[in-house]
Each structure stands twice: as C-alpha cells, then as structure tokens.
Length: 573
Image (cartoon, rainbow, N blue to C red):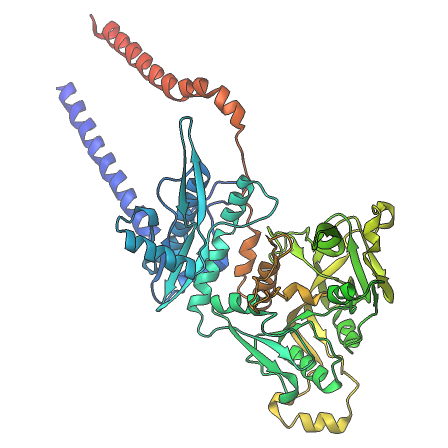
C-alpha cells in the first residue's frame, strides 16, 4: 500500500514538474516577443552590428532584396567570406524582419550558357569585377571564375556591393580579413543610399580654373553609381550657394578667388554647408619640369584663401613635400638604341604615397593614396575646432620651401636619409566644430542691414557644428587621361599600372562630411585574424583527427561498457 501511494505521489510530482516546465517555456516565449536581445560572446563583437545599422534596418518601409553572387565550390578563404556575409545578413534580418530578404547564387551553376553569359555581363556592367580563383588539392589544381559581390535592390533601384577588397601589399589572408571587417559598412551604406528620400547633392565649384569634368570623371562616375547627384556650380553666376547642396568640392583652383566668391563660400559654411578643399600650395608640375632642361622654378600659389583657411584652423604651406621611403616612380629617357629611346623607371620623391596611422573611419584599412607635388599643412590653434590628420608622409620625408628649383638631377645620387628628417608631414586634415566667419567684424553696417532683408543672404558670424576637409594637393582627385581623351579610373597610375586608394579616400571624405547617422563609423569594426600554422597543421593532422574523432567515440564506448558492468553487478543478485 505504501509503495502504491509513493508511486502515485511520484507520478503527480512528475506531471506538476512537466506542466511547470512547459509554462515557463511558454512564458519565456511570450516575454521574448517584447524584450528582444542577442548575445555575442566574441571579444571583438564579430557577430554584432552597430546601432546605426540596427536603426536603419528597423526603420525600413519596404523590402530590401540582396542577391549575393558568392557561392559554389570555394576555397577556405572565400568560404569564410561567404559565411561571414551570411552571418551579417542574418543579423540585419534579425532587426529588419521580413523587410530583409537575401539569397546566395552561383553564376557558374547556371546550366544555360546564354543565361550564364548574360548574367556575368550584367554583373560586370554593374561594377562587380570577377576574380579568378585557383583551388589546389594534393592531386590537382583547378581554376574557376567567381563574382565576390552582391546586388542590393530597393524600390526599383539597385546598387552593387563588392565584397572583396583590392589592397596593395597585403597577404590574401589579410585582404579577406579586411573584407570581412567592411561587410557591415558596405551593406548598410548601400541600404541607406537606396532608402534615402533624396539623393545627396555634391557640387564641383567652377569659376577659378578648377579641374575639368574629364579630369574628375573617375570620382564623378563613382558618385553617380552610388546614388549621389553630381553637378557643377559656377560661383560667378549666383549670389549664394544653395543649402540644398550637401557638399561643395573645390578641386585644384588655379586662379585667385575674389572677395565676393569667398564670402559665398564662407556663408555657405556658416549655414551648415560642408566643403572638401583640394588646393595646391605651389605651381610645381611634371609637364613644366619636362619642358625645361634646367628644371622648374617652383613658386608658392596665392589664391587669396589663406585668411579663410587660417580662420577655420589650418594653413597650407608654400612648399613641396618629398618622401624617399614611399613614392611613385616616373619614366626617364636614359639613352638611345637605334632610333628608339631607352627609358627606365626612377623613384620620384615628389610623388609621395600618403598613408594614415589612426583608426578614423575615413582612412581605416585603406591602401596608400597617390599624390603629385603635394604640400604640407600646419594646424592652427582654434579652441572650437578639432583637427584630425588623415594623410601624411612616412618617416623619411622633408618639405622643400618655395621658391625653389625642382629638377631631375636629384636622381643621379642616392638620397641621404639624414636630410629627410621631417617625419609624417600632414597633407590632409579633417576639421570639425563650430567655425567662425572670416568676415566677422569686417563688414559695414549698411551691407549687413541689406543682407538681412534677404533670407538666403542673412549674415551668420558662426556656424553650428560642422565639418570640412582640407587637402594640400589638388591632383589627389584628378584622374589620368588616355590619349583618346578617355579617363582612367581615379587612383590608377599609368606608369606602373597600379591602383591606389584615391577614389576610396575621396568617397569616404564626402560620405563622412554628408552622413550624420554614423554609418561610416562601422568601418572601425575590428575582426582579429587568428591564423593557423599551416605547417604544424599538416604535421599534426593525424594526431588532432584522433583526438577530435576517435577519442570521443572511445570514451562513449568505455562509459557504455562501464555502465553495463555496473548494472550487472548491482542487479545480479
């Protein structure tokens, strides 16, 4: 009787426990619908997205469709990039819900040859370049064409997203790692561009002999592809710069600005406008140098901008920067063979490759930026404005003050590092803060009274928090031009056929000036590269296979035998 009562009690307790477990699970399920959270236990938050990306995806009004063309039989590196892309898109969908849809497509898996060619042609035309992937095994090596990229579509518009970075001087593992780091930024940036209610407007200032449209065709094409509205704006033909323009670009002016045009730029800044300055400190030019056997007598430029830039927080020096450690070469004729001139490539110290050494979003994970007769920049004490050096030379550099003579004779002897003792000369500086008008206390009461009667001309002495970037080399935004008057991509150096990061740098500058949501800050995400020792892996392959496969199975068998022996011994009687 006692045994039956105990059995009934145990049964009742089991049922109560089961009901409680199901009730707790149901309650947790209901609560989780209202209190959503995700845990990322990695030290660098590898699987988390930033708050701006969360806000962006949560506020989507329609479906974003993402087609990723990285699938199929890939090697370990690209498989990792594919899985990182999948993890990111799953994270975006966790916050965007049904408004984020994605699929992975292998273009090479399309059986119909015409359809496959049409898709590949379309992807190339959209800006997704193919990569020739070599997969090696112990017995064979095969090559295949892959498209490490995606197409993001929203509201009838689409934008390409290249997944693989093209970086000079990095190992394949580092390139793949940096590509993983930038995934969130690239997808969030594409979604932001496609969902914005109007395209950001970028205006290239005209009126002071700035670079031509052909000389800036590379960056213009890139901006247009990324849904920017690109236009020209003639300072002389308007009485003010409209606030509708998000950023103005002053690209290598070659004549002085008059006070009327300076006033228009100043008041555009005071009313919240952003400026990307690209101004040469001297008149140094390779074409002029080649035309003179004795070299070029280089002088400082006077564009009547010194007082403005000084007031905002910087000074462009009238000097020419040299760097013997990192620079581009130029071809020079060294002799004749028959009727054909013989040329050799020589490092040209006046064409330094500029780098950045901080983690600012504009320059993080960027290749060097090619410059041509750049000048140095000094920052000026200005309590309301912070300064960030974006680009500078390497350790072995110096600034040659103008007036001076630049000639090819310096290439006849090996440079003495002792003379190149001005490390990290600044060439590009970001200014952020509240700028004071250069015309404060300089205008007559009559002029101020007249301007205040027109809404767009109301004089402002000080800006709200704003930004501008000053670059002491106008050629950083200039693309080289072919003989047939077509433009090379921005950053392409035709003498070495190398692609530098000029386009990415200028694009990042413009995006940082325009964007206040913080999307660009996702470039600062860090993913640590934890590489395996490939030699050690090969040598100890069998040992670790036994530890990970044979040992667990053996332990389970051993525990099963021991448990059986224990039961026989206990219940044998």
